Length: 273
Image (tube, rainbow, N blue to C red; front, side, top):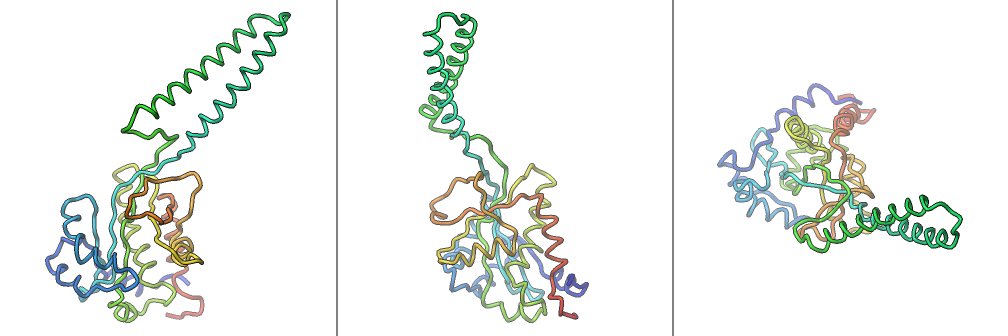
């Protein structure tokens, strides 16, 4: 069942602001707790304020009408890439071997026209030149990594709910299936990302999911409830902080329809709110 006007009004009453926007936030973070994610809890109580001020990462807090912190998240610009350019080298090497073998066979058959042999020689030299150029770039350019294609992106660096505010969240009267995390993603994070896309080129939103469970509970949550996916041809530079995590992403263009689906199925069919 679709979200009600009352529920929309309730969500609109929640403020989403930068962590340094109000001095009171510095006091409120002391009440933030998430025992399952101590590192994320320590971040909002520690380095988040300075990192937000420095401008490398933008930190946001989502506040109740009484200014309790329901959750925080952070965003920064990123870059994804398709590394299948490596396959181009492999395919070129295979083609080179085929052409060389064909040229050897033709050399044993003098009755064939010289034009055919010359054309094969030209193709062989062209592939050799390309391979030499690609290999030299990889060996001599320590500042760049050659990839087939790059994609502009926004990374969700941190995303954590405040366990101390769960009772107050429940008091909002929202359906149980739409808990803090998924609701804040669609109602607060997605609008920011779509607003950014109005000003700059933006293709993907992505995150690194830290999930060590055997049944991938967190990853499945991101996939099932937030529309993220694994992509075999999309890769990212993985910082030490995210070693062991799984890259999940989705096209920004898909957010609009997926957001509509979220709000259209916001309540269980049996709900009569």
